[in-house]
Each structure stands twice: as C-alpha cells, then as structure tokens.
Length: 336
Image (cartoon, rainbow, N blue to C red; front, side, top):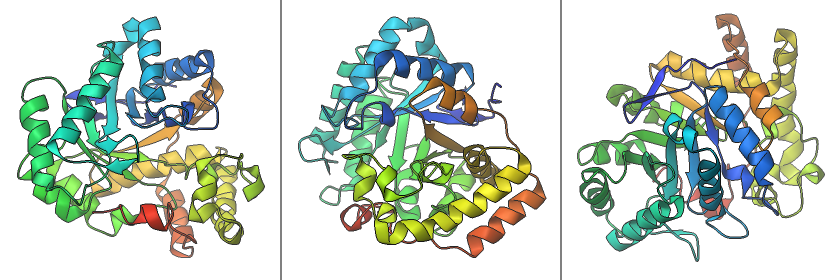
C-alpha cells in the first residue's frame, strides 16, 4: 500500500500523494479528534507524508486546523519528523483578505509557529494569494531574509500565481513548492505556462482539490447532497443550473474506472500524478479525507496505461466544466 517517495520538498522525500487537512475543520462542525488522528496516521503509514494546512482553515475559529495539528503532534510526537508540513497564510484572519505587507507576513508566520507550539516544524510557508496592494517583491524578501535564511522555516510556497509572477519570484527567492488546483476539471496549469516553468526550475506542484472537492468521486448526485453550511454551496460549479452538466464528466470517468476495476477517486489521483510524468515535473495530488477508510482507499497504488490516459484525454477534450472553480469574487484572486 505504500506510495513510493519519488518527490522532494525542501530536500526531503515525500510520497507521490499528499494529504490536505482542511476538511477536518472547515465544515459546519469540526471533525472529532479521534477520527481525524486515525486519518492522519493512515496517511503517514501510506506514504502521504506531505501535509498541507492553512492558518485560516476553520469555520468555528480560523485557526482550528493549527490547533488540531498541535493536539495531534502532542499525542504522536514520533510522527513530527515523518512529515513535511506546508501551511498557507498571509491573510487577514478577520476579513480573509490577502495581506502581503511585511508586517502582515510576519504576523502570519509568527502566529503559525506559535500555534504549532514547536510540536512540528513549519517546513513550508505558503502565501495563499497575491496581495495586489503590496509589492510582491517586498513580501518575498521578508519571508526569505527573516524566516528562511534564519532557519525558522524551511521554504516558501506560492499559491495560485501566474507563470509571470512565479518567474519574478525566482529572481528573488527559491520557491520550494507551487500550490494550485489541479484535477480532471481544473487543467489550467497545462495551458497557461505554469507547468513548464515548474518543470524548468524543478519546482514540485502541490495539486490541491484533485478530486474536485469531492465531485469527481461520484458520491454527489445532486446539489441537495451538499450539507447546509458547506462552502461548496457558494461555488459556481455546484450550483443547480451547472451541476447536472458537470455530472457528465463524472459519469464518463466512472465508466473508465469501472472498466479498470478502480474507484473514480483512485483514477483521478493517478491521472494527476501521471500528468506530471508527461511534463517532467512532480505533481503531488493533495487529497482530503475525514475518515481512515477513505485515506486507505485513496492510497491504493493505481497506474494508468497509455491507452487509459488517452481515453481520459479524449473525454476532457470533449467536455468543458460549467462555472468557475470558485465564484466571481474569488476567481479574481487566481493566477495573479
């Protein structure tokens, strides 16, 4: 069951799949610790040791995800050295707006370090979104000179930036990881130049929401299946007028998965990994799951043949998702 560790992040080997912790706390009620901890243990045991969290991943309290990780590594201190942890920040926690000012970035990183309480190293600090009100060069220099160069954190990640911004950053600071949404219905990085820049500079890509926020697993049959208070109810692709059309992609993928004898989720994750092989760059799907059984299922090794990849590509060429990945307000922050 172990996923081979072929990728390197801040000089450390990580599995072909990574694990996102957002779903534990970004829901109407927090996941029970016992259930969350079992899922985290299963991820580590299965080789998915690249963990991705966020300073603002909480609906009750924005920092609940960090509190949960502190409790986890307090209970399982032996696992702290087994993981590479990336945490997104650089956001005003009161209004959830990007804050890339030197003071804002310092406040964010210091807060993350405080909430982790030294229980686990902050391997990577990820700037969640570009702050249009502050020069990005100033943001990056602050992170590099005050935190990376001093050894307080391991490296810098950038999330949802354009190829031009990534190139600009590389002239100032090493970029350890690029984080961006990649899935069977989020293929923009293969069209906007980002994957080529990452391949050229050997920057691994942390592909968040590789299962389309659960949509690509086939478990959602209608908008009514989304719980009240779930953030997906605010996103365009999950709206009633778009939902049925987007299900056409799910049905096509399910047929290929059934023929292969795997779940749609396993097929979707394998496709993301193998897209990286095609472009000569490490693409690490960061899937989320709240239960141990889901983690174990998703980590079952799955490899797609050239014929299967071609069949999937044919489906993608004939299908265009209806609606944006987020909503009109949030879409404006992507690929800046």
